[in-house]
Image 1: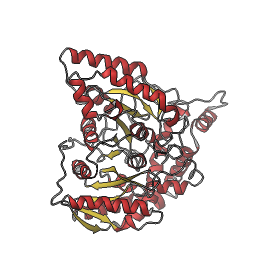
Image 2: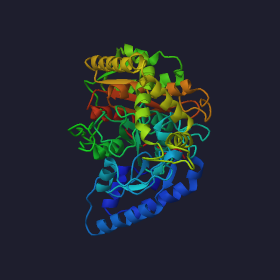
Image 3: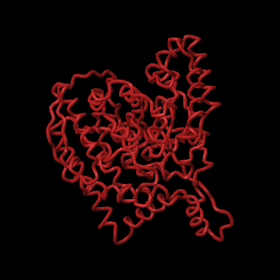
Image 4: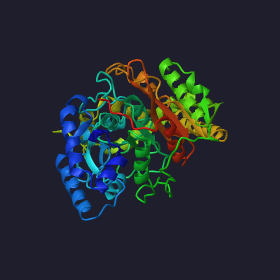
Length: 482
């Protein structure tokens, strides 16, 4: 097996056993990035020097008999909205093109403590606002399965990096599907944990009640291992849950007694590809063959999820991005005439069109005279959506659905139609509104050879149940795209 095809679990075992050096793995992957990333554009920065130095340190530790670390010698890519001390953290925006944070995100600290090697920072839609990674101010990431197609978004760079064999693991963030949707398009495993299970400290905020950091991998086991490493309480994040996720990291193909719900509302929507629908239904038959019971459930309020999300998310975004004003953080314009001109011109020059659109929407729904009509009402609908899931989970253990209505679409196909772009996340948004965990696993390919993703949802802190269930669908290592 080639180095770029090794799972994180296999890399850790081989490095600890002295069968392969961490430096060999890093050099091989860096060479692969050099050869192919000019076509894919998954990375906004590659850590050549620091990754090699870190690998040498790990090899020295192993030679001295120290093999501690659940990710010992494992390279990982990070979405570029996660802070790494003194390293560039751009959020793929001109606003932060020179920003070097003085601290690291909690998840980064945990990765380093377990022996991981940060190999680079990946591209994203600017400030994680988008569904295709076309909103990046830095470059256009391509889908490794078809370079004419998008990789999904907003964590498209991380999904593409794993699918292309540039790294066995990556981290992304998911505010409305930004891990699960690109995982579907790129044919990898992507997990949005229960809200609060992973600290958001050091994640540049988009929607604070929706954001969650999660893993990308080519195997269910690798994704579960990475989530186990990064999860846990953190006093620096007030929304962090005061408990650790119960993850067994030991999965088999027996689902006897498991009840899986198929929401009729998710299989009868306009825009759902017949190929995707058929592939997802076929995947649920595999669950049935493993002993699960399949039954229909109803989520009547999810038809309001997209509208609800784009009120709440934009409201939170307009608040979170107010700090980028040319004074506190970020790009500062030249030769401003006064303080108002400084604020206005700095934000005009620093933000891209989609970010400006969402800031304006957020300010509108929070403004006097519209707050009750839009934002307050959206919060009430959000509660009703959560109640629908509560009722469904009283009847079933897991809910299965498509992760996206189609496979990856062509670059430029939806850029002139924001609503069509927003509907790319129609199946993923509800989980963020309800705070529940969701995983996407590849379950098939369409007639054009593009991956199809199955989404599985569970109740709060039942993340391990999602890994157990998805293992039946994806219990072998996914191959890389090329």
